[in-house]
Length: 306
Image 1 (spheres, one colour):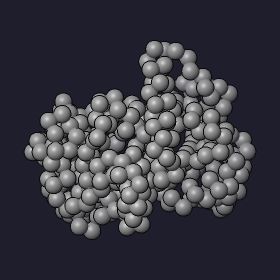
Image 2 (cartoon, helix red, strand yellow):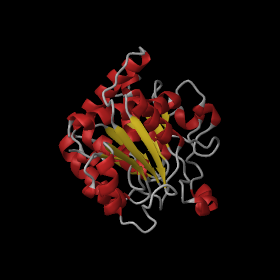
Image 3 (cartoon, helix red, strand yellow):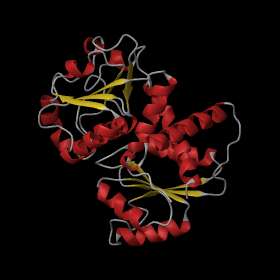
């Protein structure tokens, strides 16, 4: 049995298998062909952090696969309100076929998975957002930007950046990360990625200058500067991130055929300009839809590898 907590746990071949399966399932969905690979199965969705795309994509995806999804918030279960994580894990996994958790601390996910009798999926933690990277890479494949890509990440050194580090270090492509001073990635995750890059051939670099990162890039991506739980840092962060907005001037430095990605929600005029978000290079809504298909591919893959 496999869990999906971070791309660190997966080989290049496995990641590509999941993406290929997702692309096939997307074609089946578009052709309105029934693909009930998980018929009669139940997915428990535990949300400590709310989300539009995670909720809709997992719930709709499980239904389209012939199964059923249960939405469980902090108000619905005892997790975090007196019951140990290991007890909740053993109970919930004994009644369902798969569990998706969107939470704060990555360590909670790891503990839950340790005691779970079914696959556990990381729907987002403070350390990683691996399901988003499945959708992102799937979008790169569909746009033909997966062949020797140069990816530029501009913004906060957060869970999205960490996930890009894992994807690049596993698949072996070039990743340039531009963050303001004081907002760099977790040093241990960087060290892990650099060690993996020795095997995959990935070229990973870090800078405090967005222009250096974006120059000639074939994929440009960013994320919100103020994640859930950081609202009290808003004023400071807005000041510290001056110059990091992905606007037309910055995109002009990228490859002529570069695409723009954003995991959403996007704050227009903050980390990305309206013109870039709505421009011809933006594929953010194709990317958002691929959360549905990518996660369906992931859930089917996990079911096949029990």
